[in-house]
Image (cartoon, rainbow, N blue to C red):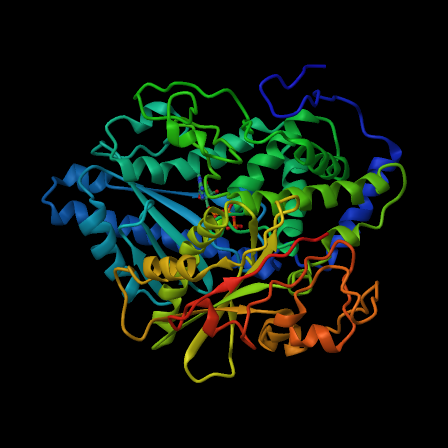
Length: 553
Ligand SMILES: Nc1ncnc2c1ncn2[C@@H]1O[C@H](COP(=O)(O)OP(=O)(O)OP(=O)(O)O)[C@@H](O)[C@H]1O
Ligand SMILES: [Mg+2]
């Protein structure tokens, strides 16, 4: 037994062998998720391999033509090649149907990213049969070209090595590969290096894969799968699961899943999750170190990548999203706890999170654009700014209001213009001192809209509209089949006039005429004085926004 010394919990490494019940539970778990399409069809898998083969041919044709174009001699032209590596969920073997293939192309020194990759290869792909939806993002943190090849989505990165010839056998895990390589290439290589290292650091690859599939399914169902919004994405979940696999090297997937919830329920964030100690590499690149880098100190849920230069992969997490994830870990733990000693019904674990039935107040962020393509890029931009909205709400309300963002957008297909909506639930922080003054969110929303409208590719047809909505006002297109679920009857009924929750009835005409019903732990509504729907009052039309938070006494 070895203690996990530098970690957030005092969970010992347990080498216990699985019991009979563990095996039965693992079988039950497998049965439970069978119908949930965790893996693509055999036909899709074959198509993926074919597509990768075609892509390999294409990029090698491209590099050869680049070597000729740049006047290299015959020997170099003959030896001109680039190597394709997959990474992300496809490389880990945990991709679902329709998932993208994250791919890295490693090329020689004379093939540039700006010109040769983003122009020449782009043009070649554009002319290639079967390639559709071709988009480039050359100025991203990790520059990427994305497209579909015979219906398979591909994200293609490029790393340029300081070599005239790329060797047939290239070991990208060697730290020295990063020597004299530009920053974007280091970042592009990083994805592959991280994925390959994870696979080397887990004691049992099959158990790791199976457990990660379950965790990804659970995270998607519970609405906590999205790096961009401030929850966790594929690589973060993979690192969390890999750490559990290290702590329980002999455990089977049902036990690993249950320990996953137990460990992270108690984790003392911001202690980092790490698969191995952080090492200073040969090149002096900055690694995650809160003692040295003030910025790293602000990270709330550090999950550190296991290859040099080790970085926090989850810097997007906010107080609000950490709270939501912690609640979900607790829920997962309590479900698994009740299953530990007996044969389980796992389906409860994977029940979808009832987002629109769980809160009384939401911000609805509607966006629209002139056409489908504009909406696609506008949506991506607004989505990437939602974290800022959450941070602003937390800051402007001094932490008294918490946000719960929905991880995906909803499209209103009934409209002729291209429209879609994001939703962020609002809730008063438990234990926050009662406030008699309403929150004025006008400024918060105005600032958020201002920052969104700074988009470099902004067009006049790109619009954003933020409104405050109550559950009854949530548009039906967010619900499955467009049908609003019927709310169960509320538990406690108080007679009109008794007003036990000190509801300000003068501002809530409905409350004075009907029974006031407040389930014990439920968040009271955040009344917005004088408006039927909060839209106008949220400042989107330049008027005042006041969100009142009442004491839950
Ligand atoms: N925040 C991050 N920090 C470090 N590496 C990242 C980060 N986001 C993405 N990556 C790298 O890019 C790879 C692909 O990211 P992606 O979001 O597609 O995850 P994935 O594991 O492929 O999951 P999914 O099934 O959702 O596609 C990751 O495996 C990781 O190596
Ligand atoms: Mg991926």
